[in-house]
Length: 140
Image (cartoon, rainbow, N blue to C red; front, top):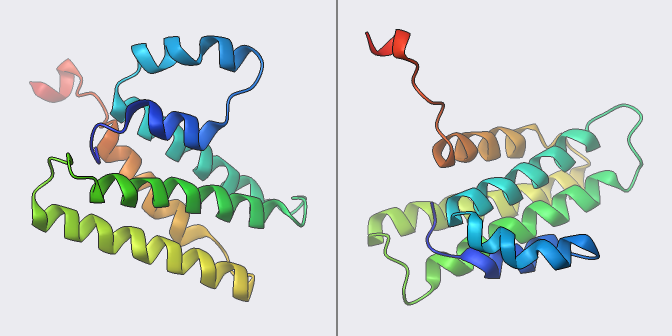
């Protein structure tokens, strides 16, 4: 979605260890950049959702916000890269969204507020990365 970030985002976000290290190059070779972006955004979103649970570890929210911050920071860095093929208007809109996500994460931490707006934005972006396949029934 945001460009060809490939293995840079995978390495920066998931910090593979053990078996993941051994299979990391295979994953980078078989997943598209959109697949990687979807996966890391999905992981960050799951952490945010888990932090909302009544029995969540008190530190879960800060870990989730931090992970979400890293994902969106990586998206912003990728948008700023010289080889990014997005048009300037789309880049500006995505930068604006990334800025909002980072500021909202700060607000959630400062006020110990709900991260539901962050979860919603992540889900919307995930839908754009992996739109629901149309079925034959809906096509007719």
